[in-house]
Length: 112
Length: 112
Image 1: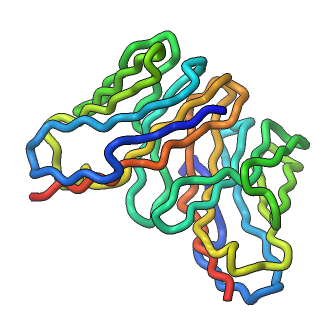
Image 2: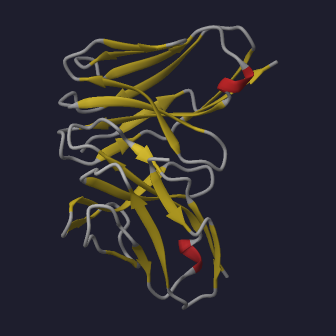
């Protein structure tokens, strides 16, 4: 099925560990986003990309890194995990004209 | 800086009622406005997108209106059903290449 695929769905990390959240889309969307959503809170933008090779910071980029080597993939890297990074992470993509905004099903991350 | 607010934060209605969700934004210079639905533990699903030149969009029992001059949008849900229970978020985009700014959402419960 066409859409945004995120892996893993769940993960528990220990403080100080690192991991990469994977995101891939098969809709040839130029724009891709990473959000985090804390319990009962709204979405906060971490990083976004307007095309392969181009990334930019959102509202809450500290502690995260991204890369965009292809149109399809937009991985999010957590370095030195901290309890404050416990959250649900969503990847999304859209067309250049603003239509087709599609979210992945999320990765639930717990840092202990 | 664009800010998006939604009132009410939570709403509980009996099945069959018509209801209105409100969204306000501070900067009227928008490219489009979208309404999303989020089910518990899931990603967001786009419901309706209104371009800045449009006044409303309809899909089934949903109707979204846009009044740019007053910085307001409403989502009207007709004949509500228990399956409509979810969080509804509105989001605005300043230009086609800009980030999307999300509101905090309205949590809707439709009681059978």
